[in-house]
Image (cartoon, rainbow, N blue to C red; front, side, top):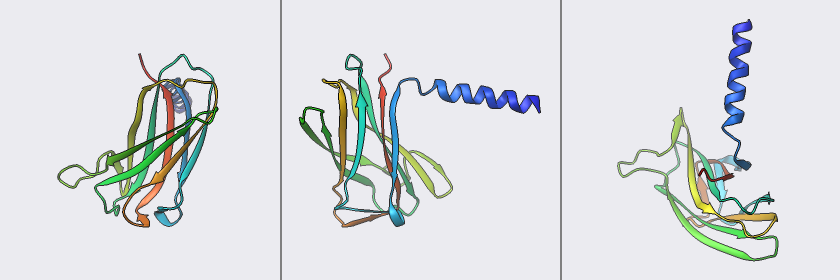
Length: 155
């Protein structure tokens, strides 16, 4: 019993030490594994350290039935002052042989997509992020959830 307790404690320390630079992580689930094109996702992140560089990621969880090779989005960042920056992204979900990228377990696949690398936030406060679906169809099926991670970039 003590052996299992020791393993659990070591695992807990290992997991928490891996997240030292992470300042935000949240996922939003899709009803019926479907993302409607006219339902953007919103996240709000409080940034206090404006001296550090950050990496911003999207996390995508989908099922094997996701029918497309990519995911097209608009990524909009709203600064506390109201400044707005929008970038368009097309992320590959499948490789050139049709196999899914990322980590798979059964019918579930997880993909971590880099949106901004070594990014500086220029003011302290609450930043709002909006992710818009730019795919050609109204309902994109096969998506379980989409999330946002903001973490300090490793030096």
